[in-house]
Amino acid sequence: MSEPVVLNLGCGYQTSARCINIDWSLPVRMRSSRIGRRIAPLVLQGERLEAYEAMDGNTMRHDLRKGIPFADGSVDAVYHSHMLEHIDRDAVPGFLAEVRRVLRPGGTHRIVVPDLESQARTYLSTLDAALDGERRPVEHEASVHDLIEQLVRREAYGTSTRTGLRRRLENALLGDARKRGETHQWMWDRVSLPHELESVGFRDAEVVAFDESRIADWPTYLLDQDKAGNEYRPGSLYVEASA
Image (cartoon, rainbow, N blue to C red):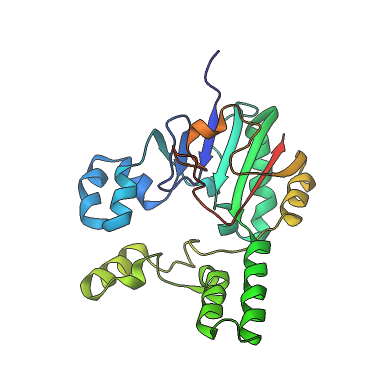
């Protein structure tokens, strides 16, 4: 039996040898060119460089704002993790329709996003604890940070921890995080996301666990968990639907 065609959209550093990994991010663009591969150790440092060097599988450099470069009904499954929240709310229906276009009938669309409900419940829990004197306000501030920071920051993730020339270089190279869509444009929960999927024609939308999927042998793709079975992104919402 031939290997199913599975697209990993907006992959960033998180690639799989069993997928066609598609993105327009800096690491994928560097990995896709000889010059980029040479300058990567100069541009990337620390965790970024480690993640870049660990990238696995086939990567395709493509701007998904221009559509998905596959024919109608040619793909068995489409996966994307922590990508949908970066799309303008008004553009989401069009993106989901494009995913449905490339999926074969009955194909699987698997989405992973930050779970707004989880973050909101944590915020309320730390708020109540702070008001009751059980926790210090600084602990509550951390939950506010987790809820808001990705919506409002202007520097690339990690750049604010740099200093001097390194910080100025990264800001010049990467630009305003909000303008280029690195920050969150919307948030989703277990009610709104399945509803959005079914509103554009997907069927049987449901919340699933990180280690279960309609995609055969999903844990072996090592996208939502590592080889030891640990979840990569705790606090995420996992939703699947059929085309």
